[in-house]
Structures are given as C-alpha cells and as structure tokens.
Image (cartoon, rainbow, N blue to C red; front, side):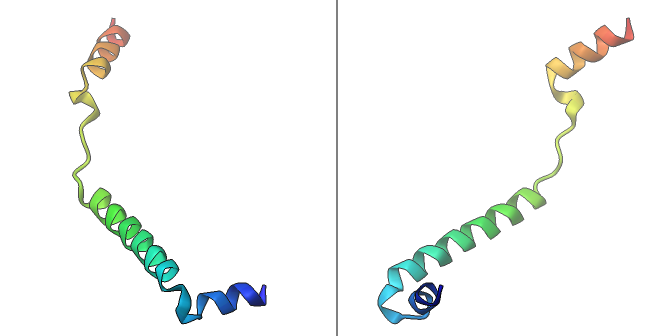
Length: 57
C-alpha cells in the first residue's frame, strides 16, 4: 500500500502521471460533450413509429 502511494508522488513515473491525466481529461470532456448534446426524439426512429402504429391497431 505504501509503495503504491510512493509511486504516485515519485517524479520518475511522469509517463504514468501523464497517462492518468489524459484519461481523466478525455472522460470529463466526453461527459460534457454528451450532456450538451440535445436529446433525440424517439419518434424520429422508423422502428419506433412502426411499433407505435402496430400498438394503436
């Protein structure tokens, strides 16, 4: 446990730190991008329209 903490703060593992930072930034950017996207209308899907028409009958 102590060795893992020592590795996190050791300057020799800069590639490890850069990789973790890139993963974190990409996950946060993806989350923000997906949240800003407008929700699509499910009725635009032709399969949904067909199922709704079948259920109305």
